[in-house]
Image (cartoon, rainbow, N blue to C red; front, top):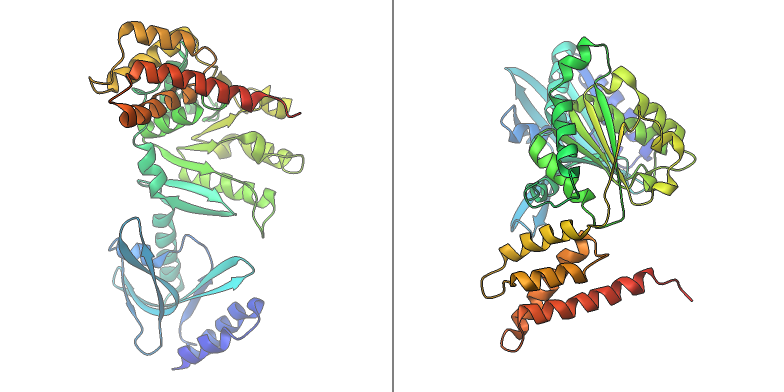
Length: 405
């Protein structure tokens, strides 16, 4: 009952006193035990136990607060711990672990205390849990709001992106593909010649011309750990602290792909210098392949755009020319059912009429036409519908680019 009383008592204290009070009381109650404590997000004991790497049982002598949630996408319930005490067995060693949660502003603090007979064993257990949770398996590690989270859904969406269904201008697709293949295959060569094994590339181009699809296809094919940064902003940490977190995790996950999409929106006058220092990292960034994208290269300063040791190669994603549109429209036309498929003459006509369309607009042309055809299959041919949709989309493009009065 001492632990239950301690938990209830602590949660009535000011937030900045909870951890110290519990630590002090546990040390007094279990004077014959060693104590390892902290709030590292990598110490996810429940995930570790779910993988059968340790066993854990709730301490029946206290009330354990287990929250039940509903996952509507998977049509199943799930549980997670707010406040609970566990008896843990790991490699024949016994531990008592207390997990607690409380809010500081909009941020939830998850804190743990590990009670053990031997400090070295306790630290080995702590390191094993954190190391396993830090591994990136069939998921993408996403950084947002100052925290890393594992995103299985994003990884699943990436699995559908391949180079087979990607049309890019000229040799662009092959050049980018070879760039990454050669990098990840050449770690020993870099070392032999004393060159830091790191590389950065920058994708430049207006929206809708294949930058994101290319990144997804690369991640899908390379089978390397992937880290994706959404923002360096968070409520409690500075941009510099979050940038440090990003590169620390990338170094731990190497070899890996670090994605900085829309880098011009990630950087500003205050954080740019610190970001460049971390990016320069030299030997510290061994095995990190950084891919950054921008729709607005004019917003990036010369320290990013014009210095090869940071982003060694710039790949430009332009609007598709007539040959690219021919390949794209032909590819999509072959996917259509026979009753919807365009004649060669109609394909050529669509290609000629879509000058200035991005790949995204070409994709929308097919999707919107297919939907309209399914509604009007009794009265309209696919060719007639697509020609009408070309005019509609071109009008839409014009209204977007038209300056406000």
